[in-house]
Amino acid sequence: MKKTANNSLKGKTALVTGATRGIGLAIANALVDAGAQVIITGRDAAKLRAAGKRLSTRGAAFSVDIRDAQEVKTLFRDVKKRFGHLDFLINNAGIAHANLTVEKMPFDVWRSVVATNLDGLFLVTHHALPLMDRGGVIVNNLSRAAVQPFLGMSAYNSTKAGALMFTNSLRMEVRKQGIRVTALMPGAIETDIWEQFWADAPRDKMLSPAEVASAVLHVLTMPAGATIEQLQIGPASGDL
Ligand SMILES: NC(=O)c1ccc[n+]([C@@H]2O[C@H](COP(=O)([O-])OP(=O)(O)OC[C@H]3O[C@@H](n4cnc5c(N)ncnc54)[C@H](OP(=O)(O)O)[C@@H]3O)[C@@H](O)[C@H]2O)c1
Image (tube, rainbow, N blue to C red; front, side):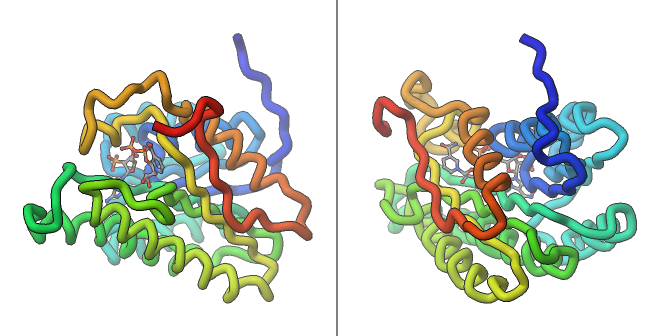
């Protein structure tokens, strides 16, 4: 069925990190369908090009590793030059890791998860804030793991719990500026991330990325006087 633009976000500019696939791509597509001007980021050049084709001439796709402070700084210098400001920031990029006990987990694995899920979240938010103003919304895609640990996933759980406290701290800071901040905490969603720790997980019991994207759209279209501070979303049939 052909989708029609509903224009609920016409005139708005949004940046979505990690939009080459999975949830980020679905969010970017939903924002485009809602009439927003969308900027996407990711590292995979081919996927970024493919995702960028949906953005029309009003959007842009940038290759950025969110762990790299200089790359993130350059991204926002370019975004400022080309777009001037941002209405919405969707901090979505993130990684998991192989299912490993703390005893067996190599330090490099721990560090790469922290670098992506915490350093990257900080860097992107730090550089995006000067471009945001009253009415702006930041959605941080965390996970149920922020409040409920998954066995063998200590680095993922720890970074998502830390990201929740970062999100809650940020909300207090930017309230006065009229910027709202949401912690999105989904359950299982059918994406590539499962290949990292549970390749044969039952996909039919998961949410689709499009379902999560519709929840994000709901957050972004709330009346300006209300903040959805935390949003937990899972499959209607119950989580895995
Ligand atoms: N799937 C689930 O069940 C689930 C549930 C709750 C929360 N989440 C969260 O949702 C977010 C998206 O996950 P997903 O399931 O859609 O995973 P995914 O399909 O693996 O996609 C992850 C995205 O993040 C990007 N990314 C990863 N590391 C990056 C880096 N260093 N720099 C820039 N981009 C980077 C990837 O792009 P490139 O590879 O192109 O860099 C990709 O676009 C994550 O934060 C995840 O923790 C997922």
